[in-house]
Figure 1 (tube, helix red, strand yellow):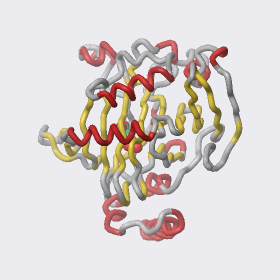
Figure 2: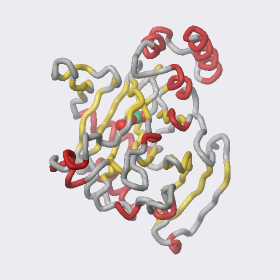
Figure 3: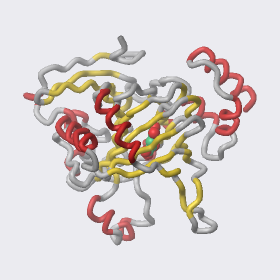
Length: 307
Ligand SMILES: O=C(O)CCC(=O)C(=O)O
């Protein structure tokens, strides 16, 4: 079965992106955090979810935002061309000054930090205003989402993946044994759980490196400057397990992304009412209908803004 999958991947790889390095593929296939299903879903840009993808453009103040809605349950959108290319380039230039560390995890047996098996990436955290460009990007985001309170947002997490890099599917919400235990931690008490993830793609890999959402058979193959945004909590502030996601293996080149986690405190009004099951996109994107100068909706199969 595994052999068949490898052949299939190689064949489709040849068709879509050229061949995939066999050693890297073997490494991923032997990684206990990955599965055939996950790797398969990674292969190409996949549209799953309900009701399927549709797109629109909205204008807020003088800014235009292109939105691909990938799924409403869980809420998942792609903001096309969100970060200007020159911003992404200066960001990449600035982070050369940072030491990006190999991401580690706490070994359950020894209690010591050990290289993570579920993630092969280098990374660091960056305060929003660490550099003029990170500040500019942070303001850029806030201006386009005035309905979101970013005051409790975490620092940018910068992740850089080289060939063989990946981040196996996981959830971003914080897990504690109970809300009571969680609230003993000041960091949690002040911000609450991670409501939303904004993932800004500053550099794309030459081959591989999308973001996969296996529970909804979706994978996003972003372009430089795109942002992927999803919700990690449900209507009752509970953990949204369908938000499971991961960084697909990088077969060639380097991918660099910056993550921004928006915490729930201050954003409770964005959550759907308990009797509504879906997140209300209007509440997020159109704080006032008057600000909506242009809205176009259409169903699409192959990417909405492709040339
Ligand atoms: O780089 C990606 O595509 C995913 C990153 C991610 O999963 C995370 O930062 O939680």
